[in-house]
Length: 325
Image 1 (cartoon, rainbow, N blue to C red):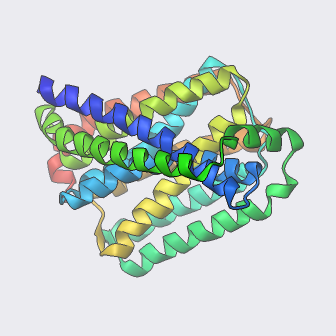
Image 2 (cartoon, helix red, strand yellow):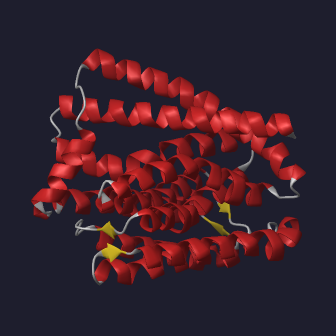
C-alpha cells in the first residue's frame, strides 16, 4: 500500500513536469509557425494543461480500465471548479476580463446536461461521441474568432504566458522530454491507482473520480494560487473553464467515438450532476461583477468537500454496485 502511494505520487510529479514541458514546446512551435503569442496563450491556457489528464486516460484505456478514465475526466471537472478555483479565489479575489469565458461556460453547462440526458440509457454511441468532438471544434473556432475583441490587458497577459523561445531544436527536445515524462508518469499513476483504490475500498470509477482526479489537479492548484496572488485571474478561470470543456467534449467524446461507451449509473446520477452544479454556480459570478471573491472561493471549497464526503460515505459503500447500474 505504501509502495503504491509512493509510486503514485512519483507519477504525479512526472506528469506535472511533462505537462509543463509540452506546454512550453507547444507555445514555441506555434509562434515559430506564425501564431501570435496572444492566440497561442489563449489556446494553451484554456486547453493545454489538460494534456496530463489525457495521458492518464489513454493509459487507463490501454490497460482496459475505461471506468477509471471516465472517473478522472468527470472528477477533474469537479476538482477544477471546487478545488482549483476555490483555493485560488480564497488566496486572492479573481478579476476576470476574458469576455469569451461566459459563452464557453455556457457550452460546458449545455454539454454536461446533454451527456447526462444521452447517458440515461446507459451509454454514449459513436455518433454522439463525434457530436461532442465537433462541438469542441466549434468552441475553438468561436474563441479564435472573438480573440481580437478581448481587452488589451488580457491580450498582453496571454502573450506573456505563451512567450518562450521559438527555436525548433529546443522545442522538439521539449516535446521528446514531455513524451517520456507523460508516458512513465501516466503509467505509474494508473498502475498504482488501482491497488491504491482497492486498498481504500473504491471501485475503478471512484478511484478515477477521487484520488486520480484530485492528484492530477494538485499541481494546477498550486499554480492557480500563485497566479491568483499575482492578479492573473484570467489565467486561473480560463484554465478551469477551458480544461473542463476539453475534458467533457474531447476526452469523453473521443472515448465514445472510438467505441460505444458505457456510462455507469454512478457517473450519470451523481458525478456529472455535481460537475453541472459547480458550473452553474460559477455562471452568475462571470455574468455579474466579473470577479470571483474570497467568499465565493470559500463556498466552492466547502461544496467540493461536501461532494467528496458524499462520494466517499454515501456512495462509496455502494460504488461497486452503482458503477454497474
